[in-house]
Image 1 (cartoon, helix red, strand yellow):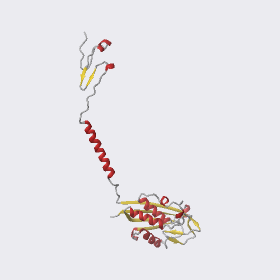
Image 2 (cartoon, helix red, strand yellow):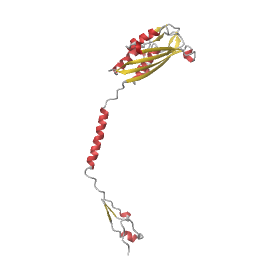
Image 3 (cartoon, helix red, strand yellow):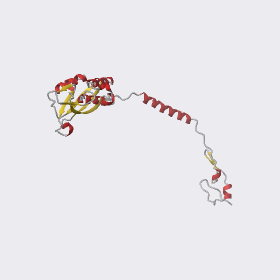
Image 4 (cartoon, one colour):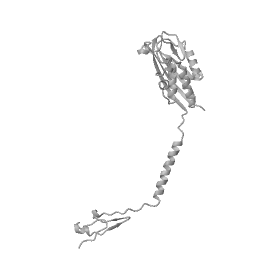
Length: 236
């Protein structure tokens, strides 16, 4: 005589005959024939009627958050910092124009425009602070209309873009690097013209000049370079 099966295990050896006579065991939400794997039957318990409502509510909440994020304006920075760099070769037969001032010298900058290394550098610093493309992309040297153009045109456009974005100049610090000529006699004229182009008070515009200790092309009077850092402040 076969022993009665317990709810958890069966101690009687499993034979083909005994397997075929096993009675079904009722489980919550399903009907399973114990041991008879080929005859396994599962009846899924229906989902609660509230489940679709929960899913719909969650979906609605996600969509609402997405719409709110999309509608939120981009964060406005109270200030922006930009750095500019430029370098030009010095060649005989060209004028040397720095900061819009013609500097007497036997060489000048070979460039598509007037080759004003300082103004080009300042323009790039402003554009960089605003997160805009550099001067070469906005005023490409492949465009004939910029051939020999005064760099003050580029400055005025950079200043216009700065004001259009809602910023004004906080301060500017520029460094010129060249071996010759000495810029001491011309520094104030250069700074004054730079302030006029920027529409800035002289107290926020600083200009320095350095030699390159006769090292490489800068020190050998074959090139001129400039670095500029600007701080732009959000208008009140």
